[in-house]
Image (cartoon, rainbow, N blue to C red; front, side):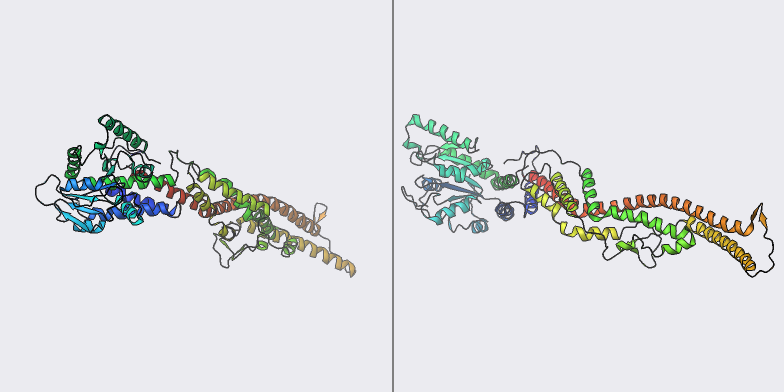
Amino acid sequence: MKILRRGREVPLEDRLKALGSAADLAEGRLEGSVVVEARKVVSRAGVRGSLSVDHTVVALAGATGSGKSSLFNAFAGSSLSPVGVTRPTTSKARAALWDPDGSGPLLDWLDVPRRHAMGSGDNPLSGLILLDLPDHDSIELSHRQEVDRLVAVVDLLVWVLDPQKYADAAIHDRYLRPLARHKDVTVIVLNQIDRLPEQAIKRCLDDLARLLAQDGLDGVPVLGTSTRTGQGLTELRGMLTQKVARRRAWSARLSADVVTAADTLAAAANLTPRSGTDSVDRLTKPLADALAQAAGVPLVVEAVAKAHRHRAIMATGWPITRWLRKFRPDPLRRFHLTPSSGSSPSDVWVAGRSSLPSPTAVQRSQLDTAIRQIGSDVATGVPEPWAAVVRHAARSRTDDLADTLDQAVATTSLGVSKRPHWWRAVGLLQWLLFAIMITGALWLLVYFGLSYLQLPEASAPTIGRLPWPTALLLGGAITGLLVALLSRLAAWLGGRHRAHKANKALQTSVTEVGERLVLTPAQEELTRFQNFTKSIKTASS
């Protein structure tokens, strides 16, 4: 597919860098042969740019009997290339050089050993390297391979067609149509027009132009020539002289190669004009909820509330019931969520592995659905096959989720180790009330002992009509129970507050795990695709 060009032309060097970057980004995402071809273009451009830019390599290509060797000899002014009519006679490319100084490394890179110097000095064709290629339809495989190799690297292509085979699908499908981006470095010659009646020449040229337009080569120069009569040779020579004089055919060829490679990468990625992807911020909540369920966050939150109430009762309850509470397990210790020895007030809970139950089948299904959904949402607007890569990236680290979630829960600060100051005050009050109750009980016990031993009894002081020992016993017990009940109410409210804070902290932890193991890999792949798109646009500019 074609990517629209921008108004400003990007330097060739920047476009080559962009193409190389696009190929690197597409590694493992697109078909390997497409990526390899793009890298070949970058490599080939680097080599060609380092060789002589004062020479323009022009290749004459065509089918058997098209007369390209005769055209080659006409330019050279001598019979440098053997001419055949019905069978291929050129097995290896032959070069004619005008002003050959400095062209050696370039011809070595092209692997053209047959070279004919046509002179140096002031010549309109100075800098031209004209190649006579083997026939593209040769019965010899090596000939066709030679054509394919050189067609891919020369600076300018002159396709020599003949009136009988100019519509041959082989040349249009295999060579001309893939050169749709190479209009600036392509010339079409309808040779041997002397074999046509005068009135048929224009019809053939018009029909050829129509076929070229179907190939995407509309506007490419189309000339009619005859080496026997010399018709059209002056126009062809003039056209080549202009292109050689500009010394820009090599860069135009490389630019066309870059655009073609970028188009191929874009087609492989199925790039189409697309709107920006939705914000992914909204995607984290469903995932966080599913992760929280799978990680047992509701169980931990409930345990935090129970643990707060349990510890509050142990700190503020009736001393006897407080002692009995010690035999009941701490809800958090039951899950192996215990503070480290010497832990700081920040209360970071640590555990190698908690004893939280594994997620149920329903929870695993909900989590898998949430992960798949977030992958699909991040990939919204990304065409296949890259969208599949984005979706896969969202699931790429799910094997680490269970352990990472458990560790996240185990190391999250739940804020339960810091004891409220009122616990100590109420605890001291309870011990005071317990002491008062014990004092009243002992006082009554003394009177009971005196009565049992039938000793003289002393009269007990009273509060109104209530003896002091009885008042101390009942007052201490009732007040202690009332304080314990009020403390339990305060502990229940405090437990709700602690549970809310713990839930918020745990939700933050599991959300971070989801973002790190699910969302971030998908976003990184999305960013990779977006950078690939930018590189393709730059390479095509």
